[in-house]
Length: 305
Image (cartoon, rainbow, N blue to C red):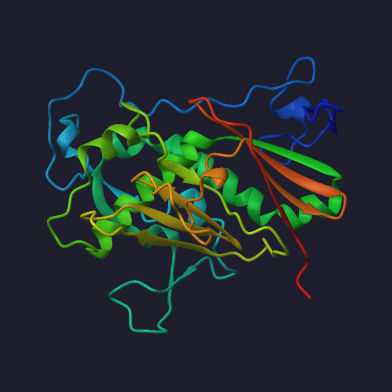
């Protein structure tokens, strides 16, 4: 693959596939004329007509489209947790309210679940889990990409990543009882999550804006709930993936944000997020359903000493 003079990227049949997998484009996701389309948002509407059921215990019950059966919802999606397991097949969990300060728990991904969604609503979001898994896997493999390719491109749905963070935010608020036992996601959150309406203007994903040396090979994942003065409940979330921090705004940011805010407009929904090491680079290109201003956010990488 190569970068053209107008900054477009041309994909060749024997390039590493842009989906982030280990196969070549020709044998994985073939394209014509070297160009590929940025992906659209996944359809997360449950199949068939609405059931009319509001299942107690499912946080999407307000949509009246539940199944009778509940399902175990992973706190960070199984596809994501499986990337973080150690040699013993377990992940290390820390920082939850029921843990003592400095306490660590070693758990299998299968045990990191909560019964907060019915099976119908949970299954409908499986494509979001897949996108998040692809993104984290690529982030963790960035050092390998940079060492073996002058240019590596991965293409993902930004809308799916946004909604995966929203899903994870809802699960964490319920599991940790951040706002008490009776908290329920606002109806508009549910309508956004299952694709019934878009994020309001100014809401959605804000990317890492700290340009400088970074080490994206740390297998770490964390979520922090954002709050805002004058707003009841959560206003969004901060997600840490390896060395990178991304913010999800569920309340439009104040236009007079300070320079250290996570919600600065020029870092909103970038078209490209680029990690470089010398002349080599990994490009994460995002597809957005809404029209976005082309933005290229860059950060450099340095190997661990």
